[in-house]
Image (cartoon, rainbow, N blue to C red; front, side, top):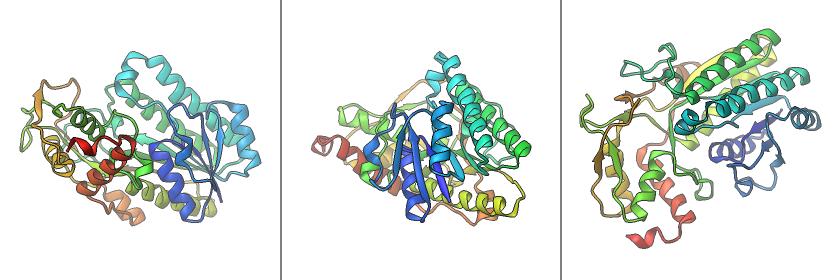
Length: 331
């Protein structure tokens, strides 16, 4: 088996590549390094610099490495940017996916794992989100992920490809400090960034119908997310070997809600940085609660998340301090 991981030099991608390699899979990464970092990858993983939407490059990689499965992680993923630049998001996330799938079909690749998002659900009116919860995305990013799922499933059905769509909830933490998230787009690094600049972490809204008034979210450790990819890849292998095709859609979360206020308190405990969170106005489109039902992954694949919130924050802080050597001095 040889797996091609698009976007494999990114934050999530590097964790997935490492996990698959350690599990004995042959791995090749295709990444244009626009947001990825090549040194995240160990020397024994082949890195091809290029775009997953470049048909000639994809054709060459699939053939030269005898690829039997694809994990597609390469995508644009910033919600605000998607609102400002919807054409770019549809071009990169949908048209680019179409080009990749055309190459996959032509090469006879039988397994395709698609990185989707809880953003496909929009703002659901439910405390626990199952895979049957209606999808109603509220921004172009979520729309492109839902359209991507449709395209992946339709291609799988038409061409006998075993497919899976993984709907990630909020990803945090680091498997190793060197693999930490370098962006300041997710809530944990956003808190770190403000604290190490001497500013208080911001909480958007404290009047939601939740126990402490702040939004409640489901967080998943990135190393658990990588392990989930291994479990799903195994399922695709079995489906492909049986010649049954297969179409799996699963939430990837812990099934536990943590409020933004509690997360801020935990960040302050772990970092030891003194601050009092400031409350600002609600952000448009924020759901009061967004917690995954992780039952399907457990029932069908025997997978459950093993790492808790403190481990996520502690490991993320180790990575942040490696990237920002002066961070600990602030304590």
